[in-house]
Length: 113
Image (tube, rainbow, N blue to C red; front, side, top):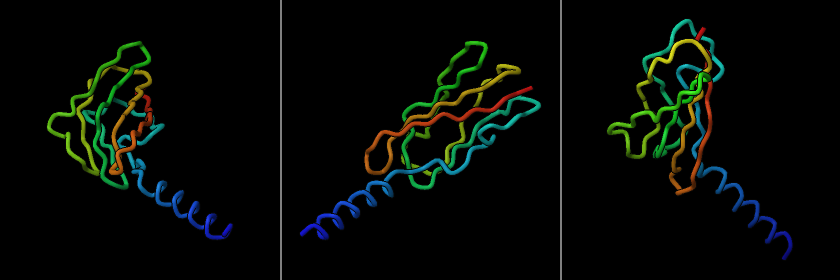
């Protein structure tokens, strides 16, 4: 009985872990140092996700919600326009729903010199 229960728990944990969509890449890359602010940020996910909010904070204290435009459906790639706030640290916090309905969020940063 114990081996069956253990196998069931392992299977359940594995399916839950694979259901979430991890952030594969960003442009600019997380931790990048740039000469100028990019015109947009690209978020690419391993599986389809629906973004619900993307917020940009500059270390000078300014915070703006990025315009999702018509990118409100489930997708693996999102390209969002950025506001140039000059030199400093940019923090991009995204929130979304994975295909299994779990809420997800992460923060990506880059610096403009």
